[in-house]
Image 1 (tube, helix red, strand yellow):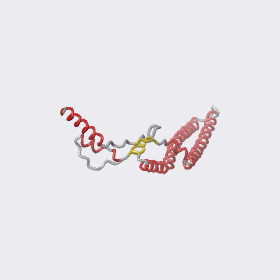
Image 2 (cartoon, one colour):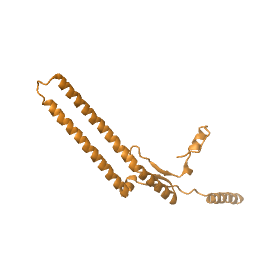
Image 3 (cartoon, one colour):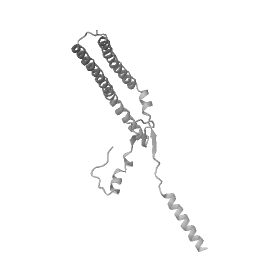
Image 4 (spheres, helix red, strand yellow):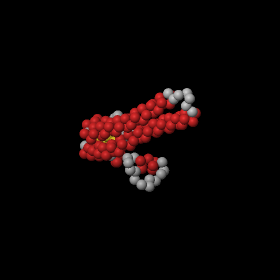
Length: 183
């Protein structure tokens, strides 16, 4: 009977000890859909209109350059057979230069659109990123992810720094961290 009492006492003591061990609070993970958020912002619609207008202006300039090129090609093709080789060579060089100019303009236009998009969107990215961080902290989220990523998009939009294990990994690898890990 004493053995049963001792076993029962040990079992109850173990159960009581386990019951008193605090369980860590579960980590909250949320997501924020950038595309949806941006589609709802008035400034995004304004930026989209600005980018379309800029694109249309560049497209119209390209069309004008291309029409000028086509006109000169037709004029070159309709030159009389008696036209001197010097004049033909000069017109050919002019056509090649126009073609190169069109190609350079296309490249510059693409770069211009990309730069304008970055310039216009950067303040919005910053504003939305700050709002995501604030909401995540207010609502106790450990991580906020972006559920719809494409090449170059961030997957992790917010992370609580207390879950950063970078320095622990460095220590495990035998490296002493020189500065705190920052994101």
